[in-house]
Amino acid sequence: MKDEAPNASAMRTAWLVVALLVPVALLNYLDRQMLAAMKTSMMNDIPDIGSKANWGLVLGSFKWVYPSSARWVDTCPIDSTAATSSASASSSGRR
Image 1 (spheres, rainbow, N blue to C red):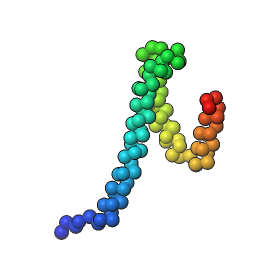
Image 2: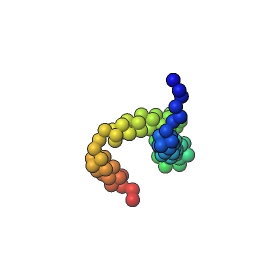
Image 3: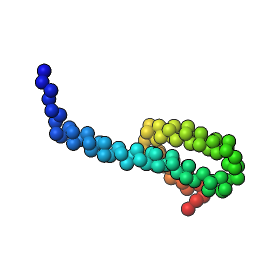
Image 4: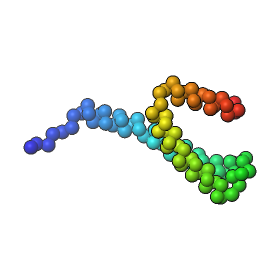
């Protein structure tokens, strides 16, 4: 059998997919880094997080809630996801 060269169109499509996934991966790492960057600010603003053990609880909670909420969003219809996001943003009291 002869080795066949990959189709140019398939290669372009593959690289397009890679190009679209790179920013998504960067955002994924960026939001996790935000917790590390905000550590001192959060510990000063929320007195209950004053110890290293409580800070570990915050990071651990994020570690488990983040992937499960992403899975929940993937399985929910878009309308209910948007409604839930809007309701939680409205109820947070921050404007």
